[in-house]
Image (cartoon, rainbow, N blue to C red; front, side, top):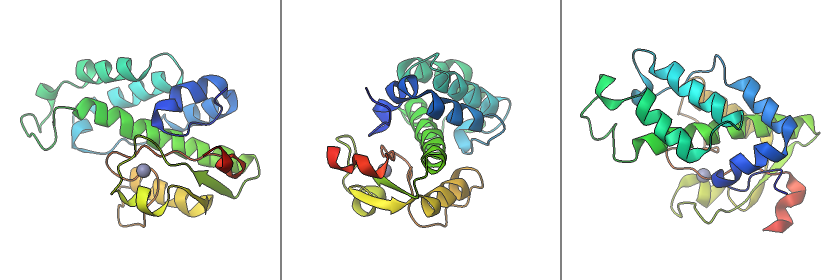
Length: 186
Ligand SMILES: [Zn+2]
């Protein structure tokens, strides 16, 4: 039974099986910003947050969340409508995946610390991008949690991207942390 996701696609299963982790993450989402051009203006940011709340309450899965983004954050209501760099063909999936990994990892880092761990293991993922910073420098290793967590908060709460790599790194990070004693499952 998956208690800890080893990559982003395992997040829904992990939170269904790990109530303490699920509630840790659910408590983080309200009031936290979701930065970026796709969520600027109107009620787009709150709409995105509401989708993440339902996702981490196990009400909806990835494909439901992708559809909800198209419905609740339509491109035509954005001030960036028509900008193909902002609204690429898979932009709705990118928003969900980015924020799912961001909130999952934030909660997982905190819960690992609650359990007494100061380090985490970051598994390689069959979905990872070989040339991304996180794959080259973090995946397959055991790392101190605090610096990774500090950088995550700097990037996704405070919009300061001028930090060393963490998970998620932008834009298509698949990596999630597990307890250090799960390293041998690799
Ligand atoms: Zn990554």
